[in-house]
Length: 129
Image (cartoon, rainbow, N blue to C red; front, side):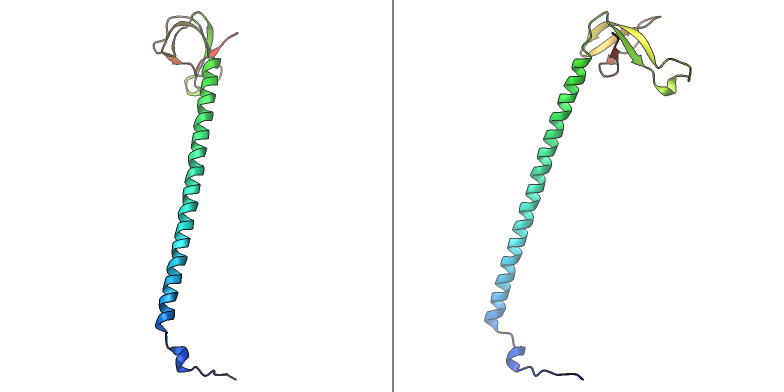
């Protein structure tokens, strides 16, 4: 059984005052939503900016610590790691060398036969005690 409701003509007509009011309310709601979205986006960006700055500070501290650990002088013995692709299973993992010269945080190393051709960075070599 279907019950039909009588709809009057007044219910079907749109009142011009209410329509304009509804549009104004809808615009205000849209503006609030947009403002909230912009605020959330700015908060997320600020949080990301702070995270990047914190990460950069940690990176610089760790780099400074590693550089400080590699505090070498001319004449110190150091170990140079040999990459896995350049050695046989029975070869040594490291080569013993002596610091011959330092220039701009790069070290010229002397090995058993001669001087190495390139300069090595502080993060590659380890000091022998």
